[in-house]
Image 1 (cartoon, each protein chain N blue to C red):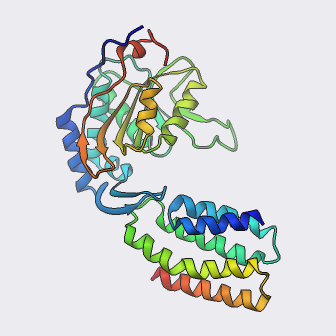
Image 2: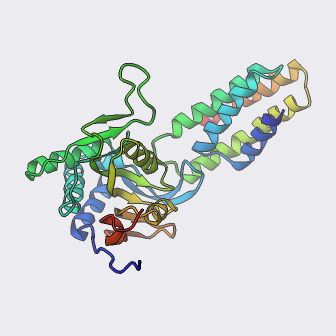
Image 3: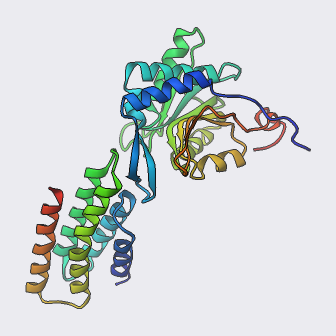
Length: 107
Length: 212
């Protein structure tokens, strides 16, 4: 899956508006080409939600870095799980971790 | 043909200074460390709508741009939605008050999906001499979309004016292409803020002696 590789590369680039929208777009494409559509759908929703929160306002570097630092590992773990065809149970655990981390990071 | 004379058009420094003050007062211009949409880091954040949605900000912006156009034959002023919307309207209102009406137009990011499917709304027609305005120029994407739209209508872009030039390549490309460009506030990558620098287009290009 070339798009999965692209998603990993974009994740490494960091969290900023243009990249968040690009990652959301990739997730939408990946969701229709995988056995884990829910995982990509959730990732897309998270990227879009962060992007909408950051749109049209001053985004301090510190805030962007804080969210990026918290979110990169659970996102990377989920992508890695998908890449090695992890079991549905494991993917669900990774998704739960991702969503929990995201909800905490909003605070 | 040698390019001999460079126009000395300059945004009125006193007016530009006042606009800079209002931008700071209204929170349109913030200082700190910000992550931009492109991922680049900047010591400044500028939100044009905050400036032009203040009463004095809108008037001052409209006036300084109108004054810039005093010696230019202009049929309409406009730019890409939504950054240019309030700027073009402010110029149109001031132009009416000054007795030299300049109507405005707005270029849609995407054409209407229903009805007329128009790309440009407002007072513009084929052959018009137009001024393109915008709140910020970074790489030039928004300004170029507006230019492409009006040139597709066989209009001539006689000037491009932005509230803030971030000096990330957009204004240089426009000047290289021969467009008469000026900005009110300049935010430099070094963190320096300056105001009212001169236009650098040559008279030959502006008057159509040389091609753009």
